Length: 465
Image (cartoon, rainbow, N blue to C red; front, side, top):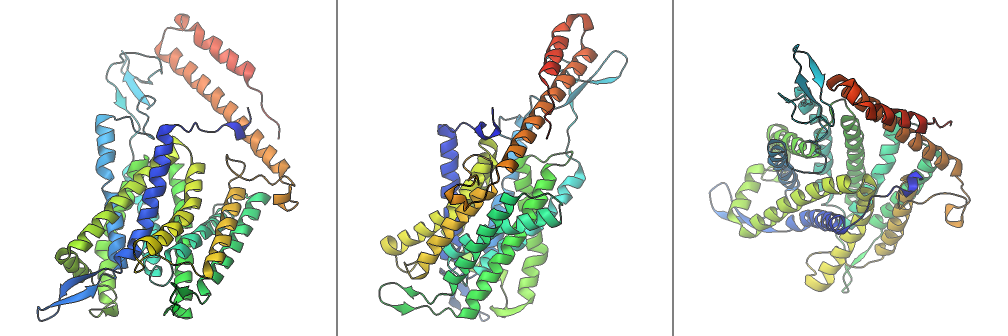
């Protein structure tokens, strides 16, 4: 069977997980812009109350990492009670037992009631510190996105975040030394076209609402917002490259632990570095760039902001857990599809809020909306090309939507390589099973394992490239 046909089954559970990821991701993206427009009561230097805007992007970043940190107890519960959670395979973990001579041997897969089981796969302490590196990238990216959200629409920012595939490709090619094929670079090209279009949309002089009230955002601040978003996309791409390396280490990190430790390091760095630095730097927030004490005081004295921060916490928690479930229950391809849908769902949500709930929030239809639609279509097209030959991707085979580009030879090469990897894995499993069975069982009673191995050897046929 071709690797293109190897698609995960999508049942009711998978549909619910995918829907929850899209919904929670949309809410999590829309909330910060709304929260930063809220006002609350704070006390000035002489103790008298004063009304202030909750324009606190770094504090919102802290809330996001706090939500991710709360995933750690879920990881501990899964490990302690050996819960059946995707990404945790307790049935196939490596275990040892002691024989009569005191020697340790690996446990056979079909062995029952072995004495003195001791799990051998323990996460080394250094891994917890290595996870601080992607967490730092995530902190820089998230804080930069929150700050950039003050200068551009959330729909424009979400679409610009699609540019991270450009940075991922460049990092893989130049830093990780991965060989990218022609269709990868074609996908990168169309993503670059999308970024140019969305940049033009952001700089267009748009009109807010039907009354013709012009935007008060200057060109310089819009350019600043676009540049901050692109920088954040680069940091997100760096985080993705590091996460990929961490997941391929000899001691792979469980998915919930990776999310939880990301939150731990994010909270830690906010407390010891980001907040002190923001408080020390000069700015318009009581003389600081951002005063965390003022943010905490406003949150304590305002019920509306407390509710808004609670919603942000819940949406971030739900999005991170559902995103992990999405990748594990379905595949990373579906995660990519979800990322492609988010700019569209965020934008339609903004339009719905503006026209049907309150014109104080959301986003109106304007001249830049046409560029936004075009950039979203091109972004999805480029992503689908880059993700080939996975399911629900676009194959460039010389057809009209390929603009004459034919990458059939590259797709065939990938198919053969995946088929060869599958056969190699099957042979390795047979050899491992045979070896452990001969070690812990009587050889004369295990002839069936030998016959299974012989059948696998007959089936194995190296695929020449």
